[in-house]
Image (cartoon, rainbow, N blue to C red; front, side, top):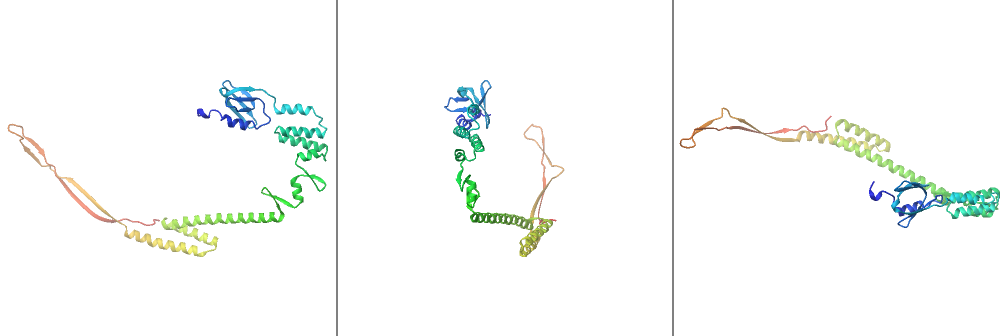
Length: 297
């Protein structure tokens, strides 16, 4: 692990972890940030566990660790201090939970209050209910009773919803058709490349593939174009086979034997020296060769 990445960026970590309302111990950092979580001592570092997981923090980055009660501990004490059969007190407990950022528990308290008193206005308002047509209703219930339909994050009239559905279906059909056409185009491109440059067997199979595509799209002209293209390329390859030639030059040499010798004296009173005088017999050949070219089998 890189030294600079040994621990998470503490400022960002503080923002991330501190959003949880259920954590305990507060870790105060030298950079001014703080983290809340359950602390496990690891000597030179601590492991802070929170609802999103855990993170390791170096002790050298910590100013102090403040021990405190968790929100659950505070909630348990608060719950014991109220009458659980009194809907007013349950609504107040729900408000306390909401102030602490514990929205899920707040909703549970308000629903518990409604279970005791189905007409409790405070609980209904806390849950976002509205009194409509003689009863407390949710926004969805009211909009549906008014004839609206919730479509992709928006309330629409039934006619608007049907039009939106029709547009969506048409768009899906259009996209599917575009996808199909692009796939056919890729098949045609591959087939015509094979007709032009493939072997004879490959070209025959490519023509058959184009004929299949022609039947799928209902256009026999496409198959005729493929057959005409193969015939044209067959003739072109035949001409290439006849016309491609190469000029070849060969040089051949052979040492003449016996090798002639020459004996001479290099100076007065010197010992005679025998020299060899090799000769090469050189022959050059130049010709042209026809190189077979074409599709192949």
